[in-house]
Image (cartoon, rainbow, N blue to C red; front, side, top):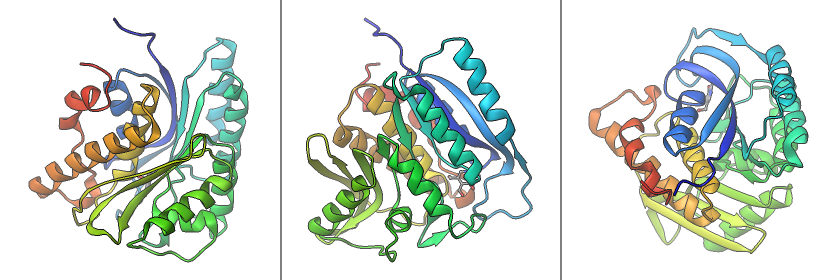
Length: 287
Ligand code: PXL
């Protein structure tokens, strides 16, 4: 029997070409059976990673009117999932959105998209991590990569590999910023340096977990969004953080494998589309 369908709000930009943000989040959440309302925060011709000359239409002024209209309709959400945000103003608006729906127990998922490979994305000012830190503090779940984690914690970037103790320390310190659940992506461990994956910590029960699969190089764009979208879908289907994280690693790595096999330009994003039919069973949501 179908249980009551879950409803999510996805707050990201639309990068019209180069699979990431909303062009990834919407199909993944939808394929997982989740009704997904979207708030596009900006429209770009492409994402900003590796392309030059992209267009950028900022939609900051439209966000609160959309939200107010939805409030007037009495809409409720089981999750609010945010990723790339283009400015401090957008971070503040997302905090306001969280305040509006927090008491209705919406799961607040923040992917603090701002950096990779040891570097803050060039479009962001140097103090941007402080804004993301404030947003992470009021989230339930955060999904930083190692670079974003270092910026959130204000520590030097270390690509690893890490011992179990080092990973636990990072997870605990990230959770101490506010969120009860942390999933750290792009992690390699000293005990298996050819495996790449995600480490998770749920402060509600103290559970720490790692799931990794054989590393695939090079780094393809948009994989963080594929991972966080699959993770959010699995959490909405009632999976534990560790199980959701494992399923999201599998979904992301399968997408990477298909993309590498096809020899696709790394800026174009990964072939997650051909994994969508298997997503529901992967996250334990039935067929
Ligand atoms: O995948 C994250 C992302 C989303 N949206 C835009 C981006 C990026 C990463 O660079 O530039 C516009």
